[in-house]
Image (tube, rainbow, N blue to C red; front, side, top):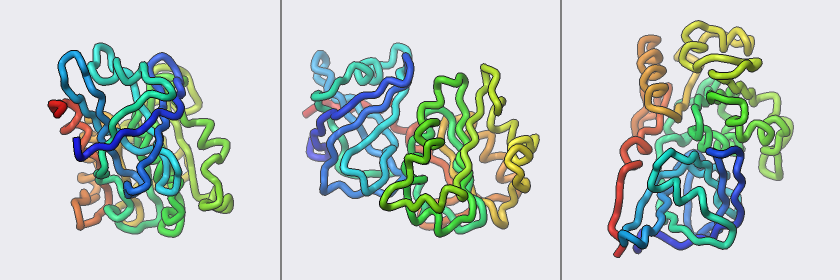
Length: 267
């Protein structure tokens, strides 16, 4: 397909029996913004079909490789094949990036909240490695909700400050706050993100004021129930949802819901 290029698998990291990250070669001509996603295709030879899914890019724009974060869905046609990939294998990656979770789609503010569940963390790992982010906000609060502790796949990457490199000065470490929360095991932070926000516990834990649309901005990615609950609550508080070319107070990624069931014939 003309809209895809062939990339080689460089490495696969299995975090547990469901979650894994994979790294690929990167088309030097492909341009993207931190927070965007690409389409990944697998050729199903038996049925002569190319199955495609949207995957957020984990790495920042200046990386020399692509990194993606995936979960294996039980009886899922795509992920049941994807989880078997190994170094040296090949996959298809779209030549054009898409996505709403880019900094151009959010207004400036004092605090920026990244709210993620599960693999919805991926675009925010890319964004926290963007130097321009720290020039626009005083604090960046990365909130990640999962069911079990072993699903906090990028915890050590964030806590060890591996994001600091030649592009990100370690002086900005005081600007980034990481708040992981668990729902099905005992942990220092426990509970659903929606409830932690509405009840105010999250802000009490972080010693931050309750969210206010005058100075707080939010970006959301994860399961559709979380997106629905938090977006509806934000609107009640006076927050306005961003649309393309009209940045407001919060923005969400919708495209995964729309595209996850697309299937294209291989030509």
